[in-house]
Amino acid sequence: MSLRFVTGNEGKVREARAYFDGITDVEQVAYDYAEVQADDLETIASRGAVEAYRELDGTEPLFVEDSGLAIEALGGFPGPYSAYVEDTLGIERVWNLAADEENRRARFESVIAHVDGDPADPDVETFTGTVAGTIVAPRGEGGFGYDPIFAYNGATMAEMGATEKNAISHRGRAFATFAEWLAEDE
Amino acid sequence: MSLRFVTGNEGKVREARAYFDGITDVEQVAYDYAEVQADDLETIASRGAVEAYRELDGTEPLFVEDSGLAIEALGGFPGPYSAYVEDTLGIERVWNLAADEENRRARFESVIAHVDGDPADPDVETFTGTVAGTIVAPRGEGGFGYDPIFAYNGATMAEMGATEKNAISHRGRAFATFAEWLAEDE
Image 1 (cartoon, rainbow over the protein chains, first blue to last red):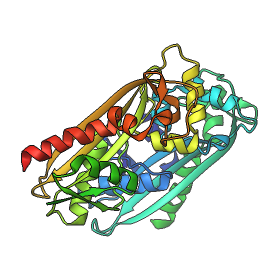
Image 2: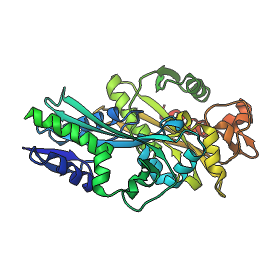
Image 3: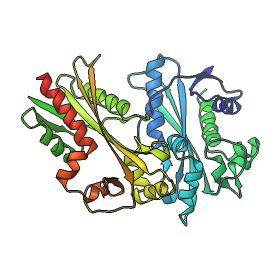
Image 4: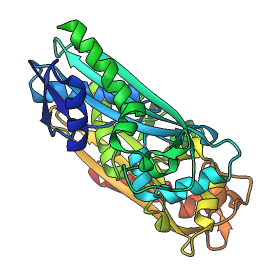
């Protein structure tokens, strides 16, 4: 069995393969599906997965993954627009915004949407992983995205080794739940 | 002749009617089309208009309008996500972000997308209006959205009367160009 992962990010594909070892092969498909503007990642991932499923061929199952950072005192900002905000404001300015707040709590969230069945009325399953932490001044050389300003247990995600990071990562948690569901489904 | 304006905002419909007087009636249709994540308003408005055209009935022409604020020193932020950023950060924090920059130049942009023809291969025309100004500390009680922090010729949009504001407004300029095209088309 092989499962298609619709993403342009090879790092995510490598991460997925580690979780699906012995369950299924993962094949990367670089289709650029539309991300709708919505306040929740479930909607964005689900609609993107269905669009990709219909546009590709609608016979073999596939999944997509979408993730974001939500800062509590900023109403969940940057949320579903985390990539856009990283590109325009940059993480230093996001840190400055959080630094003005007493409450620095934040959450990384990852949502996987898996699609299968009849393309006209597909079956969509979503799997969510979250990690709660705090926003801090940028530290560390590893990771990517918001990792340098997101701290968990005293260390930023950019200061952790891969093993340590995967053990607590939102994406790792979503992949683990998804892998469990796939294994039961076999 | 009557033209459908797909929007939930009655204020925009009133504004449109002022420009289309003697050209066409404007009928409000409150269909909630998907806004895709894209860095330009043309793509968002065009795809939204086509979706609405197909979902509604695909026989009578319609248009949508989308607008946003782009702050030059912040890479065009908040851009297509202006409404989300207003809801989460709020305009006071957007002012704080701009206050840290030497360059306070910004641009309001409005894009109208009009759809007609065969739903399978529709004709889409877009009309753009922009106004250049500067970001300032919030002032004024009028207007809505980012009006209190957007200044043009020394006054913020929230300090202007309706006539003064309409004369320079991005949306007014887009409506005016669109109305001209409609009048020629008759």
